[in-house]
Length: 79
Image 1: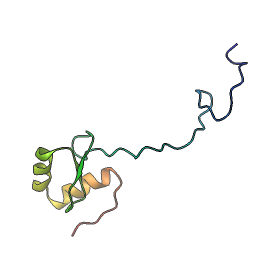
Image 2: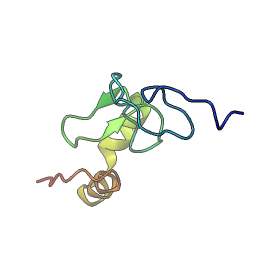
Image 3: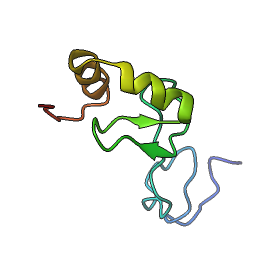
């Protein structure tokens, strides 16, 4: 009976994956911990969750920062 039920095309279902894009902003996650990131380091561009992670980011060298940025496909070259 469920298969024969006809629904409108604009109602997303398990069989219909077409739905409008979200109006909510995309969430950003911390590059170090994976938690939700509230802040971005202006010098390196890394996203971080809290002050403790920020202190850790300040100790990283350029190759490590580049590795974290490349893990989220951010094409940034630091000088």
